[in-house]
View 1 (spheres, helix red, strand yellow):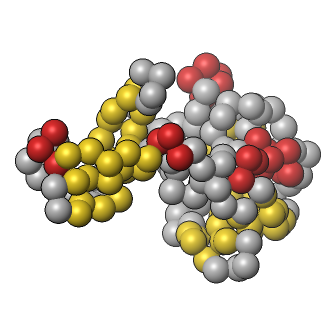
View 2 (view 1 turned 90 degrees about the horizontal axis):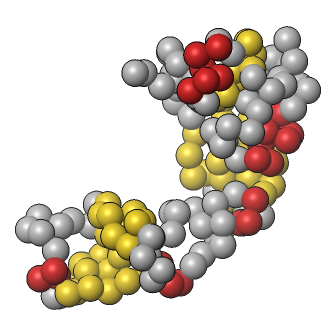
Length: 158
């Protein structure tokens, strides 16, 4: 079966920096609903469209096609006294952007009485190499299409 809109694709993947330094490798297969449902990056969908089980590809994506450019307006330094007790490096907090939109911020460091937050995706601003192997392709169920994501093993559970 070919990968097309409303198919469920099972992938193994590796993500590396452009220089080849490995960032992440799938331990379990990634499963997503193909066809513009925003379940994976558009350039990945584009590269896999029309392909079949067994297909392998390596893609080098620039930041705007991966996790975006860094936005320094999403970097904050806030007094520690404004946080609940127990704030830790690596934690995530919901805050608001300069325009008042809700946004998730990562606690990057705590230095003295100041907490340093970053609302950028951890891979923002990076050119990334994706190595992908298609492990399986099947037709999506009506419920998966209606819900816009995969159900079952490695997919979303309700």
